[in-house]
Length: 198
Image 1 (tube, rainbow, N blue to C red):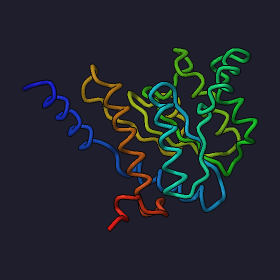
Image 2 (image 1 turned 180 degrees about the horizontal axis):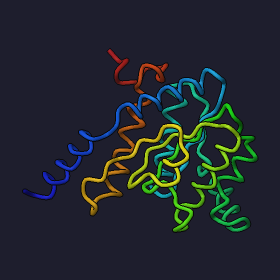
Image 3 (image 1 turned 180 degrees about the vertical axis):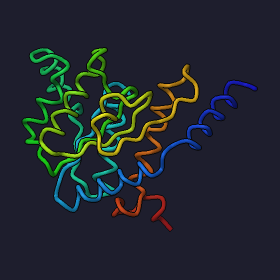
Image 4 (image 1 turned 135 degrees about the horizontal axis):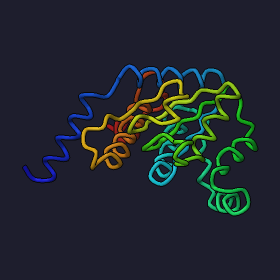
């Protein structure tokens, strides 16, 4: 079997093992967030930060949910890294934005954050802060789900089907899950362009 066929077979295995009930719970939380006039804050590092930028567009445009990605402003990000440390970049941004119990935090992370290993402490700190305020935490993560899964309300863990491809499969399926959510009848309000063009 060639590499392309093998990788696509792994994608099929992931699809067969994703917990769709968790994704339905995520859709319920997103719908409730909008109904309660809450906001959606999407966070991630690396590929997750890129996903967060794209997803902000989709949740605002298609779902009428007020949404933000703290890392979209490179000037503020680098100032906070320089002055406050990487681990505080998101939490201090959320404090200025007056995160509250009506809001939802959406995490894109391969490992979900881990305090003991000091991995993605920026994400773990944000999750902890959101929960302290009574907000909801959802996410799409990999491995064992890390701190996000431990503390979250509805967190989809992308199953590990090949330990050599954890990152590409998790990041690839993060995009699938968020596109599923912005297409979900409980969440989507406005049509996408090509589907509405006759």
